[in-house]
Length: 86
Image (tube, rainbow, N blue to C red; front, side, top):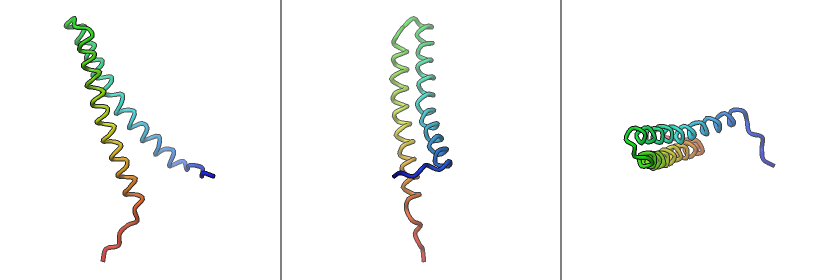
């Protein structure tokens, strides 16, 4: 039977989810909104919007991979026993 998670592990998980959420939301809002505004200004709808969407998806993917690797590295480091140095 699985153990109940401790409150500190709950807050760690929530913090990780929060970080991943910002990595997704910020590029999406900035580049899609920017593309929409450029389309309105230049009358090129939907080309800047689509460009902003592609750029935001690319940056989000890169950001998520980077965050995930960092998370895996920290989990790996915390699971290894400390090495004894003479």
